[in-house]
Amino acid sequence: MPQPTAGDVHVNGPLSNFTNAIIQRETNFVATRMFPNMPVEKQSDRYFTYDRGDWNRDEMTIRAPGTESSGGGYSLDSTPNYFCDVWAHHKDIPDQVRSNADAMLNQDREATDWVMMKALIRKEVAWASKYFVTGVWTTEYAGVSASPAGSEVLQWNASTSTPIEDITNAMTTVGESTGFRPNKMTLGRRVWDKLRNHPEIIDRVKYQGTPNSPAKVSQQAVAALCELDEIVVMDAIYNSAKRGLTNSHAFIGGKSALLAYVAPAPGIMTPTAGLTFSWTGYLGAQANGQRISKFRMENLKSDRVEIEIAFTQKLVSADLGAFFRTIVA
Image 1: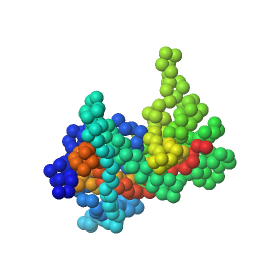
Image 2: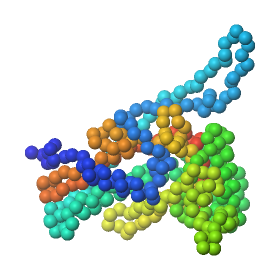
Image 3: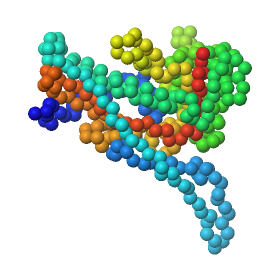
Image 4: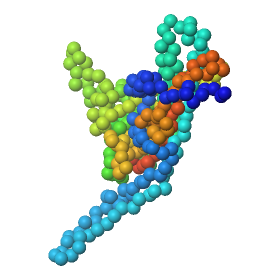
């Protein structure tokens, strides 16, 4: 009889609940904070996008007595579609290891930590490699070390650069084009380290402190300076080396920055820069398309903890973002 049998396999509620707690603590990962989660019942489907020009056109006319009002409408593009790939990873707990453990429950938790971290890294790397790069967003700026021209700006590690002006100018450009000013900015960790120590930033907040409570250049303070709802920093790291080779750890976010309008509550008719479609119709999957199973691998004399996550990240409107590439040296 093949192993595991159907009766051995189930979506593990306690482990799934435990991982939910992990997700809440994993603020290093920003993918779903910039591309909000959209639970979907089907693995693949179409969705609609709207022509912003139809919505922003001035078409109302004076109504003469006994005449009809002016009318209009908007066009829909139903060609965009999504397909949620199913990603999976597992960690086995051999019987000999479990029997020798001091706290048996820790074995399950450690395996859950392991597979959950793999899922978080996969989602973050997928988002950063496709949308935290050049050539995606309608508005884009290049950081240069000197003499910026055209769509270039002076890199923010330079004391003579003007990051607040660069950010607000980019926000105004997006707002003028779409009617929606970006409300979130995500930064690579090295970008944030330079930004928070920039003279222009420090000069704006230095008077907010007291001798016993000095001013702090927090993400919230800089967000307020730029009229943003939130600044998120990509603190997540990953090891790009294959097993057996020398480890090569690096921040996933690199040295770039992205401004975007992110819908606080994404919906069918709500503009937003991008979405994460998560397939909840996959049996036992949670709102983020994730399910964790624990089952017996008798041939290995081991218990297996396995995670599956079904999702795809989609750019909804390139016009709602502004990207700064290599914004620090």
